[in-house]
Image 1 (cartoon, rainbow, N blue to C red):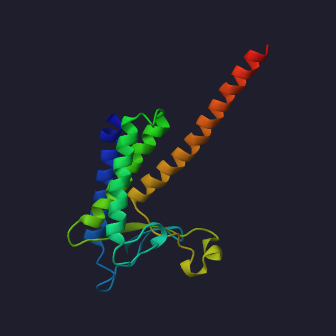
Image 2 (cartoon, rainbow, N blue to C red):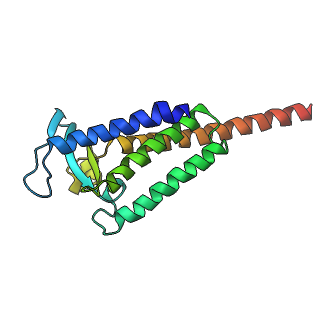
Image 3 (spheres, helix red, strand yellow):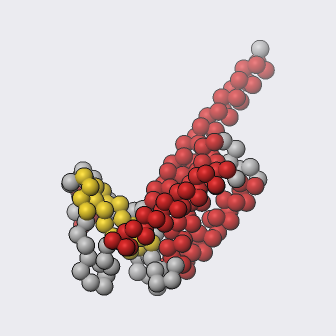
Length: 184
């Protein structure tokens, strides 16, 4: 429970506050003239306002039923994480941290989708990456905009990925130790 209270909740609040600040300080670019990006690190990092009804990289953005689909996925994901947590499926610190990060990220973007007069996820972190325009010429070198919730989800996925390999290598190391001790 402490992971959810001391990690998920503060990150969820941070996500919602940052999105509120973007909405309050950037006019809606889809209904009138938008505000130019704020250059934080010239040529590399900007603050922008982007609406996303889809998922990562804007996939399914603008699809009429995207919020319904991704809302159902969010509810299912949170339910699964809670069930797995209760079954001790996250025994390591990295696993528990991952679950807490996933909860904050999923709930942060879910909140955006269900808020009245919103119905889209607010993305605002814009990075221009070296050579990205070579891979995706239409991007102008800009990686798709994202937010705090998206960052939590990506870090959680990375931690779960690393944890899976660490546990596997630890288990195979123990098996080798047992084989070696039984052979003597």
